[in-house]
Length: 505
Image (cartoon, rainbow, N blue to C red; front, top):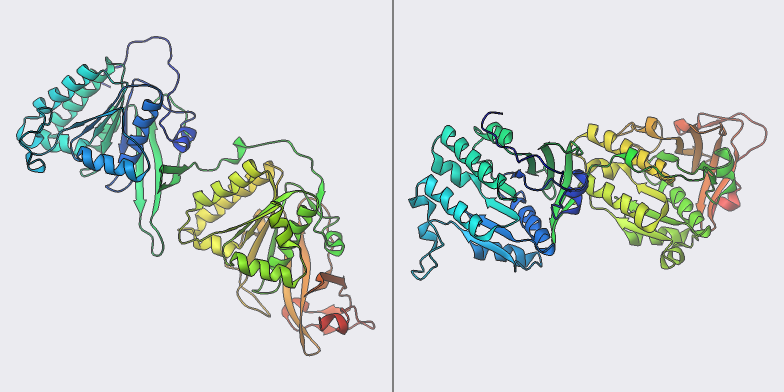
């Protein structure tokens, strides 16, 4: 592009870290040194925090760093750093602030007043400071002040080009911050810099605000496109790169995983294959979560770890139910074989949830993952379409890591025709349908395997019961018709139902 000055050709320099692990992951390791980059976003989106992380990384590597501020004072910047537990020692802060922001007549002469200066004088002050310090990393905060001083798009562009030309000969990696106060020069600015990172803060109808970033442009770098969720926590930005399942394949044995209930394994053709997933679907309270819990208990008995991500119930409720069913959940928790993570969908972004699942698998070597329920996960999503796409990628990731996954989905209604809030059955390798039905004045439960992608399965309907002895699965309900309608008709000669003695338990 006319007017752009590229560095002199030479040996390719290795990438440098941005100071943020998640952003480095998105960029394939970091950014090219001695280039000019733009971090843009509305006030409060996290630009300053990310820029400070960039300079702190330089300090850790023994590099000279410079923060040029036209909008915030040094005191404000140090307060931001303090609240993140950072020390800005080693980072030179050069203030260019309005005169009314300083009432101290003894202030150093390096404190300039851009509101009373010509743009060229402000730019020259920046040049002088950079020449005197010779920093490796520079942050300029923010371009909105330079835009106001320029007063015209043409003059503003010329000044940005002058800055780029100057920095290209100083072996400095520069980050420019822009608060998007004016959109008219955005594309011009994008064409000048080598890379652009957009940070957004979104307000949703209920719950905490959501933050996400997108790499708009990164010249010469293959990066992960699309939006990536991030949060601002103590210690800086926690970026959750969008999950790409194809990047996480690992070899594993495709053996059968038992549920711990022989009749259920028989219905599944011997059990679930490792690396597959199953969807448990049915009315509220029918026993989906309890049935899923048996897979975690069975895994613990084999010495394998499981993770239960619960959106709807608390840890206390899950432990109480397991105790009522006689399942040794607490022992498995104490033995670090089962972890329960209670998820608040109003506070956690989908990308953060996917990152939590990934850390359980890669750090704790979890072999069984239970998501209870997809209804709660749906509430965490701004749009149903995104749920399908993210769940597909998450299930593909878990499959390629050899993890067995149980998904729980509650239907609307109790007996008779039911409505499914989300049709995700086509993503599942297996589908187990659980239903209530009425017989002889009592409410009973039935289950059936309606799909198994990886092999054969039983096509019968069986009754099951929850009691202090655990989960009991009966023989096939032959001779019955209309069980899934809620009111079955018995046409057989011999009842296949569980005994009334068991029913009173």
